[in-house]
Amino acid sequence: MSQPSHAPVLSPDDLEVVPGFEHEKLQGSVPSISNESDLREALEKAFDYRGDITITRKDGTQIEGYLFDRRQGKTLSESLVRILPANGPRVSIPYSDVAALAFSGRDSAAGKSWEAWVRKYWEKKASGETAEIEPEALD
Image (cartoon, rainbow, N blue to C red):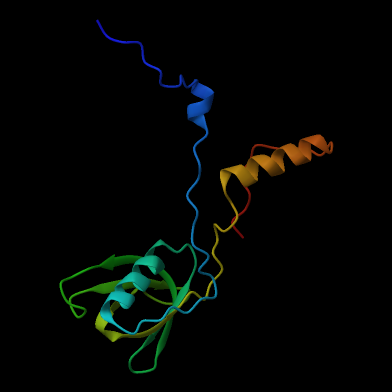
């Protein structure tokens, strides 16, 4: 015969609200990439970033755009990022060609959590404003 469980009983409402993921605030930052590990970590963060980045190549040229893909190989020269510049075709850059990285563009999802949306919704309702269940423009 099994013993009764003393675990708390959760209602569906308790399970519906889950804490959100806190994104690191990268906008405007320029990470140090003094070694291979730093470079790989910075490019991984750039891949998760929801704004434009600027990569300075070792020849001094700069590419600004949205990093939409990365391929990680065993070496830096076998690894690459793919960027979609605002004006122009897609660009592939080997990790070995990256001299610097900057999170130059606005993070388009910053501050747009579900909790923030619900808070704004109820504030509008409480003040008598029209509160609609429509997504906000991404700008």
